[in-house]
Image (cartoon, rainbow, N blue to C red; front, side, top):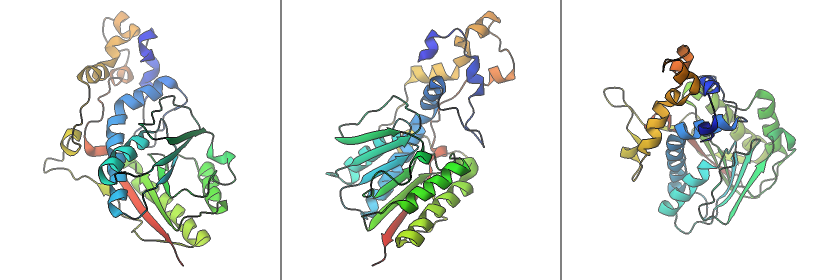
Length: 283
C-alpha cells in the first residue's frame, strides 16, 4: 500500500461506508483501504449473483455485461468464476463504467473487456445497444438523484436489440429498500419504454441467513477455496499502530476516531444481498 510511504494515517479516520456514508473514491488511499476491507466479501457476492444468473439459463452463452459503478471490475471476476463453473464456454464481453479510474484491472483471460472512465450524466444514451446484462455492483444507491435521473434517461433513449436482458444489483444492508426501489424503477423503464416484462418479483432479494446466535456464515464455509492472507488481516486490524502520529504519541490513539481506524476485513456473508431481475420483451 502507499501507506508505507506516509508519515501518518490520519486521513483514514474518515473511512466510513456504513449507513448513508459514501467514501471519497477519488482518493487513492481510500480506494485501496476499501478493497482490502471489502473486496473478499464483494467478490463472493458477485460470484453468487452471476451464479444465480447462469443457473437460470435465461440468456444464451454470450453475456454482454455493462457494469455501472464498476470500480476496478471485481464483478468481472465473479462473472468469470461463475461462468467457468456453471456455463463453461460462455463468451463474456464486459464494459465497466465508472467516473474514477481505480487502476486495478485484470481481465482474467477474457478477451473483450473495456473500461470507460466517465460520469453517467455525460451520456445521452448507452454506448451500445446490445448489452444483455446490466449490473450495479453496490452502486445503484450511491448515485445522487440527478445522476440517477440521467441514467434513467440514458436507458429510455437507448434502443436495445436483445429480447432478453438481466438486471443485477448488489444491495447495501443499511438502505436495502432504497436500492431495491431504484432497480424497480429501472425495470419499469424497460417495461414502459421498451416493451419488456419483468419475470421476477422486484421486492425479492437473495441473502444468507444468520444462525441461532445471530452470526452470518464465514466466507470460507460458503465459498470453496476462499482464503484471506493472514499478514494483510493483521495489518488491517492493527492499522493505527503503523501511523507515525500514533507512535509519537506513545502508541496511544489521538482520539476516539483514531482508535476506530483499525479495520477488520469483512470475512462473513453479511454483505451478500442482491437482486436478479429477468426481463423479456413482449412479442
